Amino acid sequence: MSDFEENVRKALSSPQNQGEMPDADSVGTVGSPDCGDMLRMWLKFTEKDGKKVIDRATFQSFGCQTAIAVASMATELLKGKTIEQARAMSAEELSGDLGALPPMKIHCGQLVEGALRSALDGGAVETKPAVSTLSDEMKQPAGKVKINFLPPN
Ligand code: FES
Image (cartoon, rainbow, N blue to C red; front, side, top):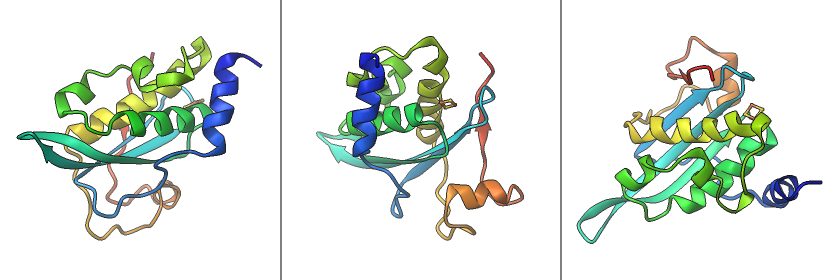
């Protein structure tokens, strides 16, 4: 097992910040054209030293294990970042201690990066979602959820 796989395995044993955030300020949902996986990220902002920073980030994923491990790492790393700092983070940076993503897994990191950017672009949070989970929403494409597909690699 490579170091990366081992790190992903460890991250998956206790994924951080998983689940919907009911009081989120913004949300972003993206789908990968490479594999059809989807990921949603919620952000909550706060004010620190006169600047708007990320207080908390959570995610829900129908992606592979790598996407879940990266999202777990990323949502930890995002705490305290300004919008500009968060926007400047690459998929590689969001993967943190997991290490460099293998070529086959680069799009998994890009899925997390895409969901973050979509949330930073101010995806509105529905106060009363028509459905409760991303999986429900995927089964009901006629719902109000806007899913942004990333450009193909
Ligand atoms: Fe598609 Fe990882 S295989 S997100």
